Length: 113
Image 1 (cartoon, one colour):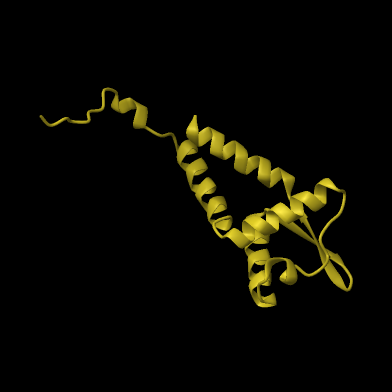
Image 2 (cartoon, rainbow, N blue to C red; image 1 turned 180 degrees about the vertical axis):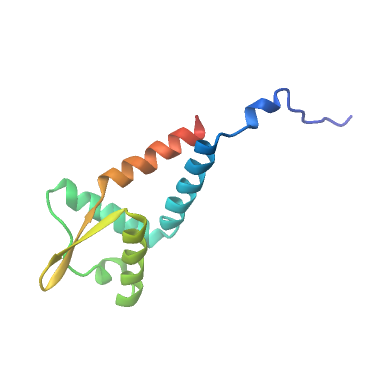
């Protein structure tokens, strides 16, 4: 005996323009977090932010990656809006952008809802 999967209510799969926009935005943000090093960087920045500080030291030793690789990960996170780079001569102070984290969480919930 074979079983078939059927859909009782095809209306459940219709999406509004806003739904589609949210899905696209979520996918773009998720792509920025799709590498373990970027997740680790974000976790470090959130921890430092909770302690009232920011990161202006080198992540290379913490991550065990080349400076150019770390710089690229920071660029991707900054471009997605997850982090903010503030000049703090002679270095740059990196902070987590909490509003973007909250937006990402909200998008995730709205997609699953």
